[in-house]
Length: 99
Image (cartoon, rainbow, N blue to C red; front, side):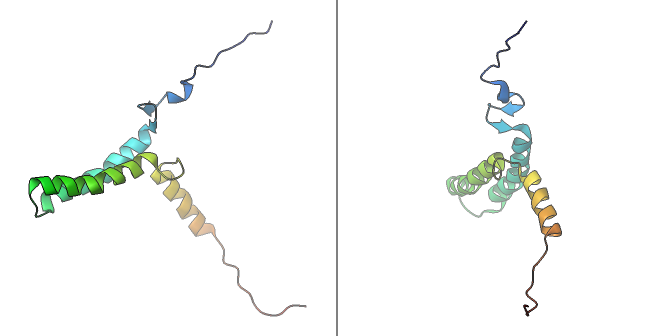
């Protein structure tokens, strides 16, 4: 007896925010954006409209970068992989001389 199982089209949406972003990426984006948002709103010596404009120009791309990550991987996972690669890499040097 051969049973057929149907996989729904949205099976990969589980654990995602709005079906697009992983929860881990959302948390990383919020952690990345909140300090920048605070400093922009508190420390910029501009009027409110200019503050909001400058803040949006800085915060929206930064938040998007945090949500998307690097090559669809979260920023912390990518950073850990890069640090592991950086630590384990070897340099090849030419010592002169051939046979």
